[in-house]
Structures are given as C-alpha cells and as structure tokens.
Image (tube, rainbow, N blue to C red):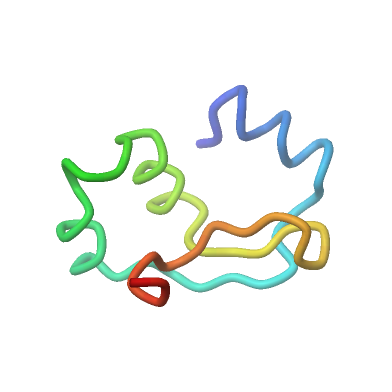
Length: 64
C-alpha cells in the first residue's frame, strides 16, 4: 500500500511509464546504505520512470 507521500507524488506525476521489479539481491546489497524509505518504495513500486522520464527510481548499480 502506498504511503501518503508517494500517493501525492503519483497524483502529481502519474503512474510509472516504465517499470522493473527490484531483485531481492539488490534490496540486500543496498540495505543499511540507502534510506529505508527508498528501499520500501523499491519494494512496492520497483524501479520506474514517471512523467515520461522527468523522474526515475533507478538501479544504482548502473551508475557505480
């Protein structure tokens, strides 16, 4: 279930225009490094792009 903040974000930006599920391996790797709130969004929303690329939740491994 979406929290109030992410629900507001979806209200303003719309649903994801692309989506990829986050593997458990990535969740484990980044736990304790990235904020728990971001990891919870990964778990419920995955990695995705919103508003046709204006905002994205991304795989940080692709940017190391």
